[in-house]
Image (cartoon, rainbow, N blue to C red; front, side):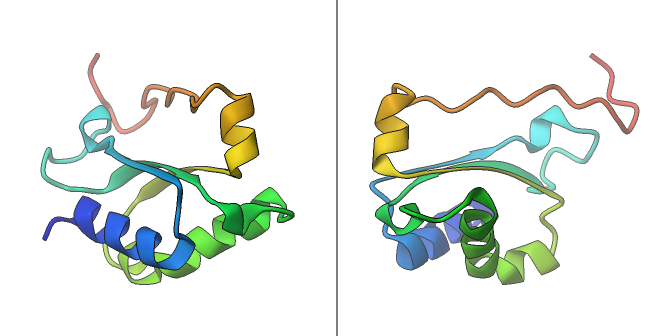
Length: 105
């Protein structure tokens, strides 16, 4: 099972999301193509209701504790309640381009 699948499995179990997207953005950074090290995660869950952003991120980080300790370099988190997701039209922001590590455009 690849890292993306593991992330999906763990977040499904921990947060019971109504919507979950895991995008491997490793190709946008100065690392080997197969590094599986940079991810964008969009999680929409009732679990986040009434929780500030930092608590939401802590819940995700706790669920992915092993992965964060063993190779994930960057995790862009977009954590929303269902109402916030609907208010944003079911969209999350685009990730900015990598600015470091000598990546050639």
